Amino acid sequence: MFVKIMMTVLLIDAFVLMAAVLLQSGKGGGLAASFGGGSAGDSLFGAHQAGNLLTKLTWWTGGIFLFIAFIMQMFSSRIGGPTSVLDQSFSTPPASAVPPIGAGDAPLSPLQALPTAPPATPPATPPATPPPTGAKQPDPTKKQP
Image (cartoon, rainbow, N blue to C red):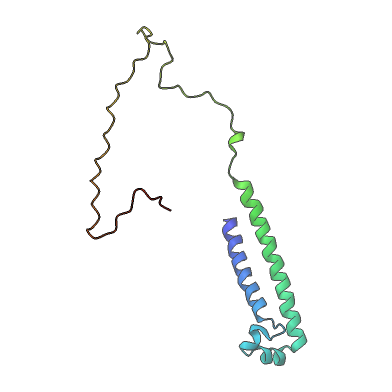
């Protein structure tokens, strides 16, 4: 329940922070001037007071955002995180399915060779087709480059 409330406050704070940053006028007039906020803000608050109000709002919402994000991170890491394999205690290895050598009633005997399959015959290659008539035959006595 606490995490849901904190997440809701964090999202609201993030939207207020975005609005405060976008409404500030920079060197080029910013987004506030694009929507007519430059002249309306000057007449309503005055140029200096509007800048101070938006600046203070930006600093406060930014600080609140970082504080809530830090608190949420602290609570999430304490609830339960991944555990290391090295934290587990050693256990006995599982019983193997193969019985140890000499564990049966049968006497030990030398290993018998497995029957081998005859080697596969390579596929027969088709005979080479003779060159077309009239084609120049290479001279076998001359060295090829």
